[in-house]
Image 1 (cartoon, rainbow, N blue to C red):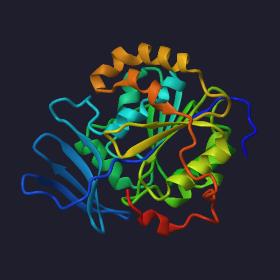
Image 2: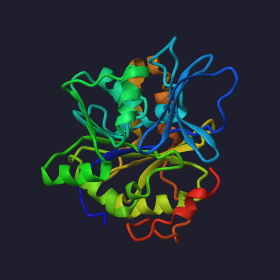
Image 3: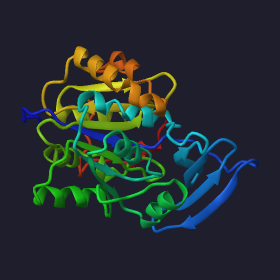
Image 4: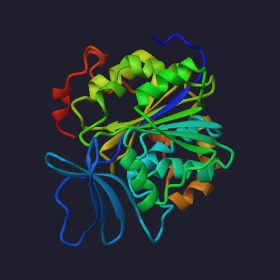
Length: 301
């Protein structure tokens, strides 16, 4: 499937996971049953969190520090900013999956001329993000209540393109299966501008690791794997053509370091951690619309 010469970046984003019941020192500000989740907004001693209730407890989707709202609380959101090392000045961004709006809010502030389309399937999540997490949509930050795969298909039909696509799709257990397959990634790749990119946030310890990695390899060819010891997440940064050089990554990290300091993003540490080593079993099958076994999602994370 990898046959296009242009560079492209897409960001596939998955929320950090923390499970368990609501603790005694936490205050539930909202509990709402939507069409897709039981949604909770919980005030903790040092942060406010959006959680989805699942079978084995609750899992964080997004958290903010009310005393330092710019600071990215989760390691995976900080790691996702590595996409700016490959596409340092995107003009058009697609974010599929809103959560509390951490990434679109940060990108809108960091890139004042950027146009951002946010796709969120659950209208209740949009309401919660606006009410409890200070997410603000506007003429240049537009929200579309729709399934991400449907949005991508229609965007292709309409001839739209994006420099950066951020897939922040998370069902509570994992990424929705139809947003993990080779067919979907191929559609997403076609949505990118020649200088665009793909960054995918997944679990570093998931039993799907080999399958996901092989799927990205088949669609995009060689890609960067970003892992840090303090996070259970890994971020894939894939391109539609040759990967940028290490010197380019380092130069872009130095340029972005002052602006990202307020977000607590150690951006200059990422270039040396972005590996191209094949650290998965490449004999595993790629995920497809016909082969995306749900039982694999039940493995260790």
